[in-house]
Image (cartoon, rainbow, N blue to C red; front, side, top):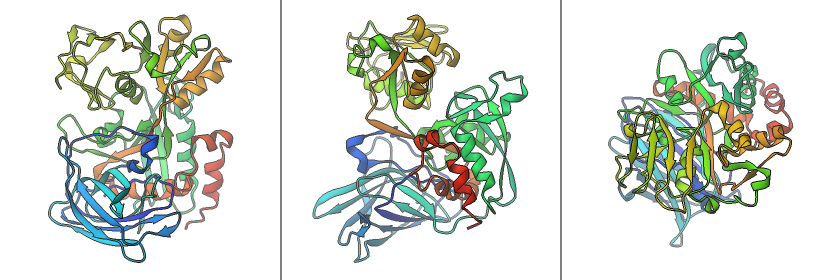
Length: 458
């Protein structure tokens, strides 16, 4: 029962879930602004022995219930067209109850139609066993999931929290030296969010924090013995919930921060590389491997397709070899990983002139490489890039702001479903159901703590 939520309110969908451990294919990394009705939910997963599921949907638009609307659910299966096997019509209160029989655990798609016209479509909806959750699906907006009966699993728990140490200002260590005491001092947006969680009267949450220096597969560490929760600006992706065998081992909490990808370039090159369409074969773009910045750049420039498969003829230099992609799934790169033959990649050379070169750098090399001219642009999230602009005194500018959005959350083991649900309940309060995010925190770093003081054990 892993609960996630995203949302601004207006269409409500209540999901009461049941199911077994699962793994399912497919990944939707992000979606365009003009497809806001297709916003994905955060991930929810429950390990339980029950099967079947009950879905109660309440559809609203501009706070008014929509009656006579068709609500449909389909299981998401990689490579298969969605089959909407469960459906029902909303009543005068805008609600409908659906029963999903059999082994219901998995990811689902939902759509709402009225008068033969689709008015809402959402993907990556996890349905699992034994919990009751509320899913808000605003027409034209983001989804939000909350439990109808928040768990008491948080009570009196000290949780081992691992955080990525080098993603300022979202999550970082006070001292970048892993051997220093300050390395385990957590600072930034997520640090303040966690501190506010600890301060909520009656929440029972406490975090013992440790910095983590390595990024690849950091999201899977909560499935092991060292960490109960892992964070650090981790984008919520279906593929990041699964291990190398395809088994789901972690779940994500609510999307408490919004990310958008962009380019960081030298100020004098702002007009020259204003769009991803301007990136040709003579342009060198720096990236960090296994990030959404890398994955989105490759998609937007045509170096890979929507599934991360490299275009035929693309050449990749790794630490040990040089390989040429043949257009098959044997050569792929996504934000969750890459095919074995592309591990340790150092550089990508395009097959055609309309694609850029990609240069792989370390976290501490990025800004220096851009300033020195070693690369012409950096493909990273907007938050980090705008912070770099401020720090550079105007030497850099942000361009090519992506129309797509991503959401960041924390990971927990699938076995900690109740705990994830409890944390979700508190995060959604602190973020005012995702109305408070990075921008608001940047203006007022105490905003989460001030809301925590108003909680009063509710």
